[in-house]
Length: 273
Image 1: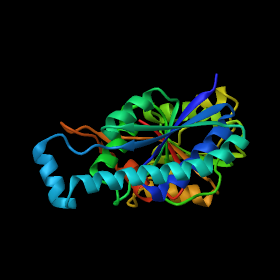
Image 2: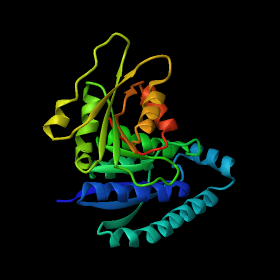
Image 3: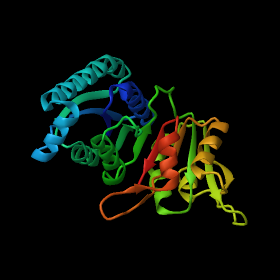
Image 4: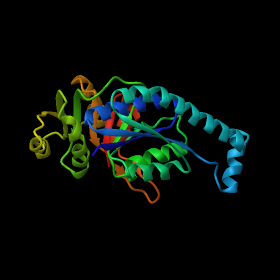
């Protein structure tokens, strides 16, 4: 049975990167199909919200036209990419949906094995940010977060941000599907001054994965920056890590390391909450 990868397309500028990352992930897994999803968000149903939108963009219909043009552009990008993916032996299909982005991403993501999505950007609107949060926090699936620039193939060298807790373990377990063919696996463990270094986790040993342990000091520098710098130093092209969040009454707020990596990562990051 093949795994299902859901590739969520949002902005036109990130479409190529998301599609290429999904194809690379499928190749690493070995048996996977890719469902490419583009969402056409309707105008707000609340009259007050619609009025506010009209004041902002001038006309709801003009906004709808732009969104339809965006989806049509994404379809053109998909069609050009899909032929190459199929020649590589990967099953791909196009899906369009209309509705609230966060609801659709959560529903479709829960039916998939992996979700691939562009990392958050200042150019994203509120709906796109909520869709990203739905992918990461509500699908209960590993999420491959793709930088907004087209990147080279990944998976030759993998860095794993490790701490001995459930979040790290939940991120590592789905990553096992791609680690078998990896040339190098580096385990990056943050350790406060005076604390003992952790051992290589048993889950890697049980699956025959050889990993080099690197102890990173936790100091004044943001630890997310330390992780990214060490990953680059080691030649890693993929970072695997757990996603951490705080829970206010109404929304999820990213933890500090998670937030830093999402803001600054220039390589794909496989996260799981």
